[in-house]
Image (cartoon, rainbow, N blue to C red):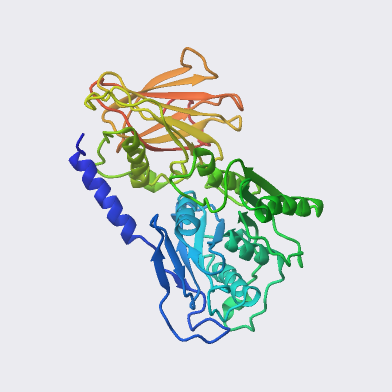
Length: 472
């Protein structure tokens, strides 16, 4: 099936906007890094057979910021150190993709290019120059925390493989005193937390200072120094009464990072990290009264997407969510198509990519897209964490009036059934309080059976307004 013209145009604009929006690096030292003097030379970039960008020859260390929209910022920030054996940096699946994922969920992320101590002919050392780079990055982010909507007490580090060794050292070593080159050096270089992803753990590595809260992740098929070393590190921190969480993924080796080709269980690891950050109190979600203007505005003249293959269905759903930029929903986490289209691809009887979205209150919304020729609808389900009413704000691909039904705890009949007009493609529904931990289902139906219903994104928050429950 051919691409709908409006959709093609929208996706072209999205791709162009993504390319244009690629952030620019910020030098750690605008006047040049301290340490060994090296003749100015451009960084070396080459591609792996799979298309990964691999960088070496780094003499001017920098951070590339990926900042969430101010209204969606949680206040947390993380500096990401990609791996590469201290000889190079695999900067896509262990850097930029991770940063994009975090920033879409309100966490400011900074991809670090650090000097490489094991590159052939390198004049740099790990414990002085590379460690100095990540400590300077922490100081730099703290120095700009107000401008970047970051809490200076919630800035952590994350490292993959060799970058994990660097991140560990940043958390374990007393910060290097650089001599006060500029006011940035007056900031603390101690990270608030650290996430070590299949880290090459320091062989010379007892703690010289108490480690910050630590998240550990590795595959059980990694080399023993990592798969067993992570488990031993967990015990070491735990016995020292430190805060630590560990995940060992079955059947997984080294270097998985964030790749579309990863198995579903591996693709879920960023959600484990995000949930840990939330549980540790590093994420401060916007108040439930703050419904983002970005979500309210939505995307002008957005077209209904008619995917043409099961794979295209997933890509189209993700593209819609990116276009709509839902601020607190957090984007696509997992996608499991329910069943394929009719073979002729013409009658869109059922469009049901099911996926889970995180909400600003820490809960989850499960969303089903339904397309229709006769009576399609949208299902939204969530589980209340508190005994409170909720306000649901959805950006819909439909027109006119929507009939909505609210079910509690699997009941066969709705507790609430009403209609509300779409205003600017938005539907706002007040959902009465349900039992804590028991499911609530909201069905959205077009009042006219000729309309097609799809969804861009929803914002779910506790309802603080003093209004009659069950009415918009």
